[in-house]
Length: 341
Image (tube, rainbow, N blue to C red; front, side, top):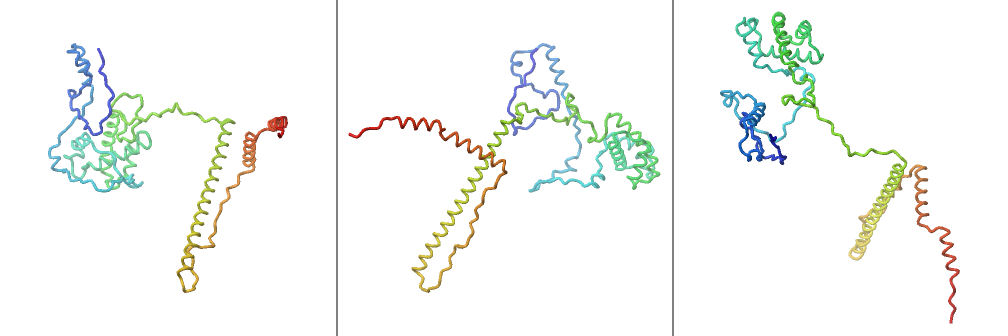
């Protein structure tokens, strides 16, 4: 049997995602297998088996949801920024939300449920806070706490609950909390769950750690003499570029001053031809302006010596050697002189 092929296609960001509500909505994009004709019964059974393995979420329609919660939210013109909670707000925030099983257990409990005495009844907010505090304490310690430790902690963290009611409801709440953790096989709060392994193939276990990419094409830097010489030569070239740039800047500054002086002289000539008051003209250009010429920073003695040696080597390479000059002189002196006619 041929496997269904999944060809890579560019993702269309403007196309709406289709929501799958049943296994019949799964469509395999293998046109070749379809065009071959009807398949055998075994292939159909295996294909049906693969389709059934797709996890389908259960949807419950809540009556009157749109009437109670209308679409009244309007996005503001500015960005919605999240404010980090303070330490006190983070400690007072309740992270655990009661599930349907928790509310059913609380409602049907004979001692502090709906049918119990109103003076000893436990509300849903108190149960939610008790489970949240025990979860946080156990998650911080990374181990289960005993009933005595939970009693001491809740008596301090929940002063609004009377101690007589706390001592009555705590054994049942503690037992129910332990059974819920044992049934789930992990803490009830999401932030205390262990990190999902990379090799885990279960699609329901998410938030896997990202694998670190290995850059195989990255070259390792070599700390040898050749690299040192190249970096030294690069440093000298950059120093020369900086000095040339500074000289160009000073040249342009001097040109600007000369233009200002020429403009001032022209204005003075116009003033001498037109003005008849005899009063001296106040020049616009400040004549005592100081021109700052920056001298390049001096390097260390070793750098100066290295630069001098590099310059001398370059000059020696360009300058003809003594033997070449002697050969040229000998050639010139041995040539016959032309006699005048």
